Length: 116
Image 1 (cartoon, rainbow, N blue to C red):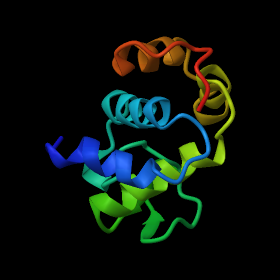
Image 2: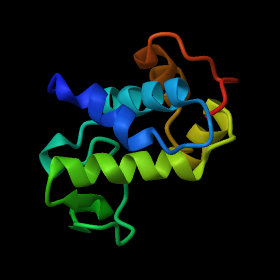
Image 3: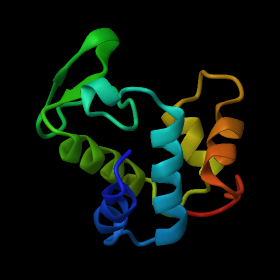
Image 4: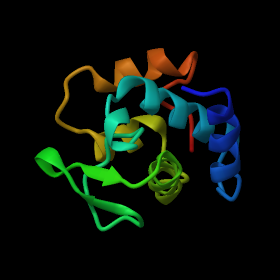
């Protein structure tokens, strides 16, 4: 992760209606928990015709650049503004047991009731 990454997250998430600190911390936590850096996909998003992406292995998005992958993750978070972290995680990755706990631990202090 580059030193510019947290700044990039804040810039991408700036127009959100919800809490920017919560959103940017969630962005970073998802980037830590997920492991799709080889695909420029910090959130391991599934392919959904995102800008600059193509369908990759197991249906994941492979982005042309890291910036496009970061933008897609920021937009995914933005779509759920007003939800709690727990609600977001239920949409984002409902099948992985203990995923919410991993995200909260990686966030450095977010609570499942914090609102995006």
